[in-house]
Image (cartoon, rainbow, N blue to C red; front, side, top):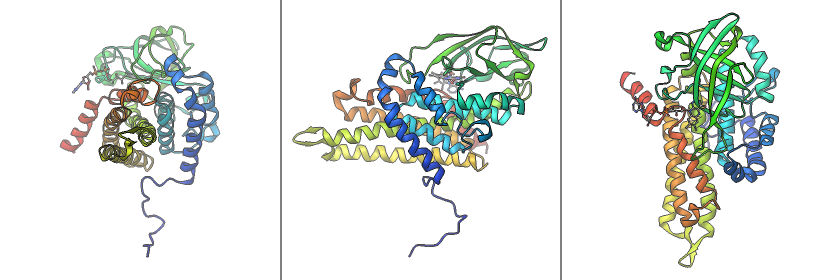
Length: 390
Ligand SMILES: Cc1cc2nc3c(=O)[nH]c(=O)nc-3n(C[C@H](O)[C@H](O)[C@H](O)COP(=O)(O)OP(=O)(O)OC[C@H]3O[C@@H](n4cnc5c(N)ncnc54)[C@H](O)[C@@H]3O)c2cc1C
């Protein structure tokens, strides 16, 4: 006889609410029917189809947590994570576009911007404007707060000078969250976050990187040369940008975990179909125990990674501490995604090495997960600090 639990009993992590289920089904259908046919061409062209971006806005996927009064879907962080997972199952480049928009840019504005900034920018971010998040520079990656982009006070606002590197969605973006220092001698206490519009005087989007994976996602350099930003475009307080960056990235890396579990699921789905069809020695290769065990190991690792990602996202929504869980989820899911994509490619044999099958692309795409939003070593540093220092 089943035990009756009170309504307040914790739910299993993978049991979805009606709203979560609805979002997931809608995104899954969209990804299969609309994104999948475009994936290989977007990878080849190194560009996300602009019409696809318009559809992402129309479906409400670019403003998942944005309040309905500002044109968003007013759903949870967990829902945003599900959306990124489902899109990444089909194309991790589309996944990261939606991830940066929701978990970094919108999130940063919703948490730290003034009411005036929110009403100015959130309706546009939910409906038509792609956002980008610009922290990294050529000389400051893991050591992000060694950044050199300078913000100096001028009449009516600020003057920005410097360069940013590796900025996701920078080619498409109309709005940039930019971190600069108002006082290099003050170290991290000088760092300040600014909202910079693409048509700001003195701002240009520079070179686009030619990458191994997530090729359709643009990764660009940003150049600030006497770039003028209004006083009203500082996010939060001057000198508090480091806190904004740390806190948004703590959340953002759960989104990268979601991108990685989606990617791994996509690779596995394709491979399961393939091993059932491909015959060697007179039978489907899925009938060999050696292959079955590899599939079982991959599915088990993916389950563990998914539980870690879902738990971090649900902790965040519940207002509980989640930083170390998010670091572990990002570390583990990105390494699992690399292993699964590699193993899947092996199971395709020679065909896996060609562009005829999707695993070749997913194998290339998987590599980024251990690098951006904090490398695996940086996640280990966070985890070790919590474990050793409490
Ligand atoms: C495709 C792509 C998209 C990106 N998108 C964005 C974006 O939208 N916005 C943004 O701001 N940035 C973005 N980045 C930048 C990304 O976050 C950085 O590349 C990343 O943080 C690593 O910095 P780095 O490349 O300078 O490497 P480095 O910091 O130079 O690291 C090199 C190696 O040294 C190791 N290392 C460094 N310090 C330590 C240490 N103390 N202990 C142990 N190991 C260490 C690292 O783990 C790594 O293996 C993107 C990068 C890429 C490639």
